[in-house]
Amino acid sequence: MRTLVVGDIHGGLRALRQVLEKVHPTDGDRFIFLGDYVDGWSEVAETVSFLIEFSNKYACTFIRGNHDYLLYQYLKHNDYNAMWLHHGGASSIESYKRLSKSQKEDHLYFYETLRDYYVDDSNRLFVHAGFTNVHGIHHEHFKNMVFWDRTLWEVARSMDPSLTKDDIHYPQRLALYEEIYIGHTAVSKIGYTVPLNFANLWNIDTGAAFNGPLTVFDVDTKEYWQSDPVYTLYPDEKGRN
Image (cartoon, rainbow, N blue to C red; front, side, top):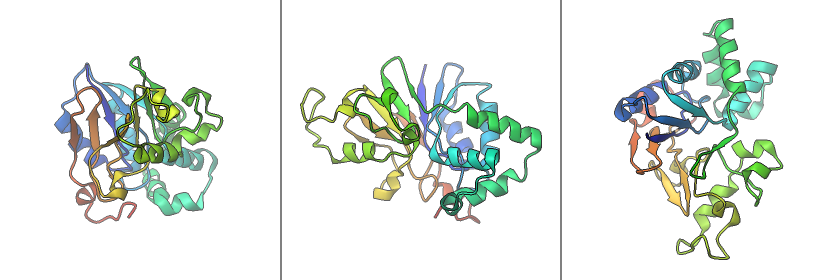
């Protein structure tokens, strides 16, 4: 059985379909989606509808991203967040105009049942952004931090690569887990479009919302598959650029 991690999609359904064709899903696969399904390209609601249908065929774990949280606040409570609108929210609002009332109810249930994080039997942590509590994500004082935090990524990036987990200087947050998989901060921001690994942390957000591809990553073999750069699949759109 493969455990396959999917990076931030941001409404790029064409990219998701394309990369899944390369993956060739089987009944034994487990897919872990790291969140941010929305806000960016034009097929936001269509992406979520696809994911709901996909989860009826394959084992899926859906993690909550910060953009998913903000869109849910709009759909459920009519909360217009100015910063959210500036960073992709407008595309989600337009996309949801195309859904029926019953379809929106199915989507609300999808957002309400997203997980804040997932730890598998091999003590691998999957979370959208990170956490701050040195005792582990189960002890996080600020619940929403798990889909907003960037400090975990910054700590891993700044580490001396020669450090091992038994070293006193190895960050305690990282040492708690065998591996950690995140999205949230696109690696394209530092000039990459492939998954990056620092210490025991992997970042799978390869910039699908911007100029990068969408990535699916096998956590056991470290093999990965990518779509074309997503902007090339939506030539008449700007995404979140």
